[in-house]
Amino acid sequence: MYVAIFLIAVLAGTRGNIRRWADGLAVGVAAIAVVALVSRLFPSTFSLQGFPTFLPGAATRLSFPIGYWNGLGIFVGFGYPLWLGIVLRATRWWTRVLVLMPFPSLAAVVYLTSSRGAVAVACVGAIVFLATTARRWKAVGALLASAGGSAAAISVLLPRHELVDGPLRTHQAAAQGHESFFLILAISFGVGALYAVGHRFFGGLSPPPVFGPVLLAAVLLALVVIAFAAHPAKRFETFKQLPVPTRSGDTGFVRSHLLSGSGSGRWQFWTAALHEWETAPGVGRGAGSYRAWWAEHASFSYYVRNAHSLYLEVLGELGAVGFLLLGAAFAYGAIVAVRTTLRRAGDERLVAASLLGAVVAFYVGAGIDWIWQLTALSAIGLVSLGLLIGPAGSSVELRPIRGEATGPGARLPRFALGATVLALGWVVMCAQAIPWLTELQIKASAAAVARNDGVAAVRHALDAKDIQPWAASPYLQLALVQEQRPDLKAARMWIGEAIERDPIDWRLWLVAARIETKANNIASARRSLRRAKALNPRSPLFAAAPG
Image 1 (cartoon, rainbow, N blue to C red):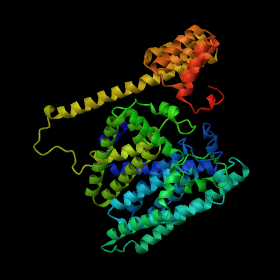
Image 2: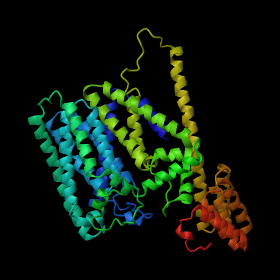
Image 3: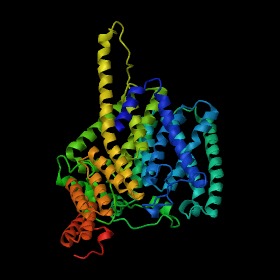
Image 4: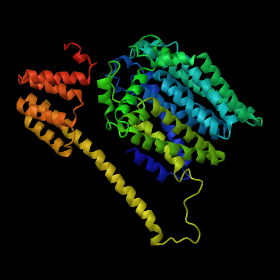
């Protein structure tokens, strides 16, 4: 699916519409940010906000509509370089007012998600834009104006603890949300107006000849001072410590979490991926194997499916081969994107710089969280990359050369390319359809169980097995259905088939222990239970199981 998204951007983007693509991405991000902010300030606007149930302690961290607070924050962070490109291309006073308006809302959403990854992504994207645009003087002015508006919006939220930290959906939180809405709206208009006035008086000033090197030196000096003042060695040790249970409903959680140096378990997730890679450095232990590895070798009790880093997870699951394939693709794309950006001039340079900022922000986000699993976020990064390295980003238009043959023979390579892309698309669709159809049959089987239709439940589970006979999930469903009927002999057979296909899934062994217990095979049940516990030793399910 991501390859298809990337190819669409490569093939559909042209030099003439790359600006519309970039503007569309920016407007889309801003629109989602507004929806997210309204969902908190006016909670009755969206009734189905999907508050987290798997992590109730994080229910007050803003997640709607992405569904994951860090994902929402990083998604909004992509908007900073994209909107900076629009800001610098505004030519009229009223457009300069409008283009600065989204920044306070973006900052408010990032603050309410309490996502440090979002802050990092937004900063990286803005810095890349500043470093690659040719209009750095105006870019600095836009950054200062947006930073001022962002700080003002956050200052509105700071004293409103019920709105920020909960309890949500109370009269107090609703009143604070209404107040914050009008204040942030006023700040948005104010910062846009101030930027328009400032541009009118100072926009014509020419930067000093050495502005670029001086600005770079100042930024590097500021980073050195900040790093020295923050005691990097001590911060690194804090980052590596085991996570301490926290509740987002506590007063001041959002602010304290943003300023915290804790890694929230990421150091443990990352080192676990490296340890998995050490067991099979060549081709890894297989796609999706990290979840089972973490369950068996976790350093603390916590359920996790992803290593919170695309690069380390690929290294652990697919070994050096998979890591080099992914790294080479990303590195090549980055090199071409940088060269494309630096070759541009004028407004085209601004558009390319904003897209490059989004690409680098996506690379960083994929390295510190599992945003690869969130389609909306990966789509922005891959579309931006495709626009920069495809014909839209090429310095040469793909037009026939005068005198070049344009008959059927000349169109053959283009037809062959189209046919190849179409064939690959069908292969990808079929590969996606197999597990999807299997899941549909398993859900149909579960629905049949709920209405006490055992025959239909078995039939749908068998259909799932026929579609994907190598997967464990259809056999698990068959075992569960037969256990409930009850046909323990058949249930034992099917759970054995499931374990044969996925022997490192501790849940299969736990189901086997239950079935064996019901069948009065206590010795076999004990062996299965011991195996389940060995594969997930820190699970609270086994805390009361001695020996």
